[in-house]
Length: 254
Image (cartoon, rainbow, N blue to C red):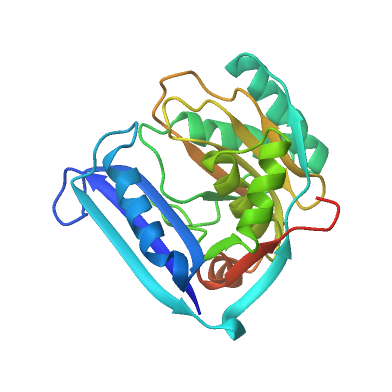
């Protein structure tokens, strides 16, 4: 039996309402790994660079096989940059190469730069007009219920290629699910971890493009933009992102 394990944590506020978001995580694991994963997530919330959470919520649910759909892991490529300015230019170039309009790219960066704290979900923009399509304000659209199908193989191959670590794993799994959503065009993201300056641009068209520097060191604000095709059914799009259980499957050549 597989189990979905989700954690969210805050500092301040009351019973998880208000305060500052510290950390969130989720995995889909076999029953044999359940206890270890729960303890690992609690440790992560208590020992995070953003602070030590005083509210930690862990949710565990059984996952039936008929609930699961499978998508392929995005191919990986890297764009080497040494400053935030270089990274932003590279990200704009990648988004344009995918097919996002200049107007939508500019709107996406403007929204991310205007954030004073991290958004737990993503802002969804029309990839042509740049119009924001979700109505969730600071909360954004959450992408949830996902993991890699074969963790051991993934970890071994990514570590051997120099792409190991929890940030890369979580980002590639999420990006792979998002890229296969109905209407998806591209994703732009950088982390809220103040000591992790790497971000990415991802798409089904070209894969997962890691950009080595996309923000300043010690900046605690991260954000995410999902670009979608005009006319995308937002109800179906959000339902897939939030509710569809997805396991990301490695290709033989990965």
